[in-house]
Image 1 (spheres, rainbow, N blue to C red):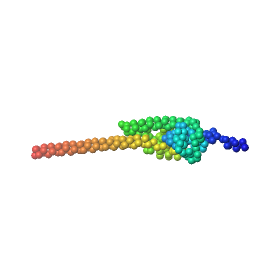
Image 2: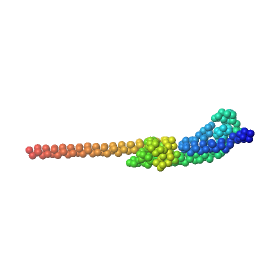
Image 3: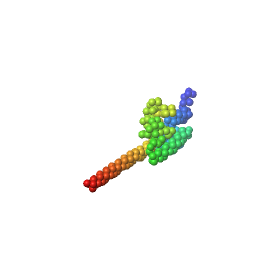
Image 4: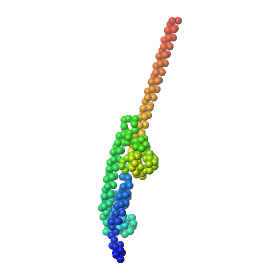
Length: 246
């Protein structure tokens, strides 16, 4: 009898209900790349980060302002479609610790990424193209990156080189830390700068190849012409001298 009373009066927002969501949200945040958005940290209604999270008796989480606006016209949960009222919502401020931490990680990542792009712009338009700039070199293959990918920590690799390396090492990077190909995303901004670098480098190489050949050809032509002219002049002189002697 006591067991039934306990179940009947059990608070739907008990600690186990919230703690489960917190554990799963923290795990997803830790495994998510800063360029992605963890679903458990966003509101299913407005798709934005949770700023004023509330939790329903079934364990669904929303931004308070968004769910209240929803309930003005619909008296049901957007996901389960079961009856729901404003009184059923429970504040969930504990989740903000995870949300704010991930947002901070995203901000720091974007700053690092922007610095990389700025450095790449400078490197792509350098005056000399004798050596490949370090920012365009893959730390694994030591060659020019073809398809750049970036980790959550801002480390850049060539996609194919990294994929082959991780297969060989059992998903460990060159320092021995765990890393899988799913932990990286394509770095399109850097790819665009590599294209610019390749364009200028190719143009510079063609320029250096054409100029010596044109110069050498002109020099060879001039030398032959001068030699022929001098030789012809000498022959003419000898003939004239011979005629006069005769």
